[in-house]
Length: 105
Image (tube, rainbow, N blue to C red; front, side, top):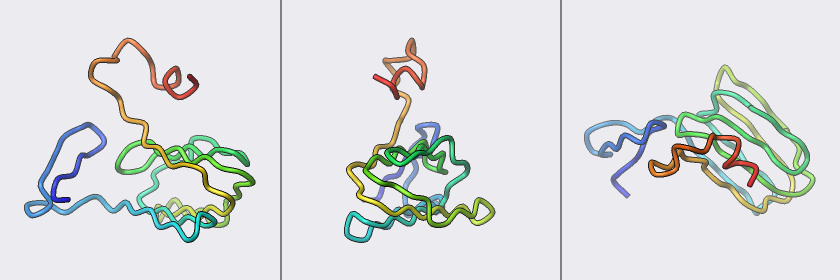
């Protein structure tokens, strides 16, 4: 995939620019290492909401625990049973709804 989108929906080509430093590494649906994290918005044992350099990322699962947090390096490590990873992007045609109304449908 040679096309990326930044947080504001601007696209750029991989060959002309470098991608923001954001990676998600999952090991067996039990452990996640996420880089490029700007802020942890909220978390509990069923959901983490992270602001990354590529947008908001929701991690949902069961018995989730934060194993490592280093916001200076932008690193978060999560362990537990991972059910889904969802990027919460602002849709162009859905501007009347706020961010949190989309999140808590």
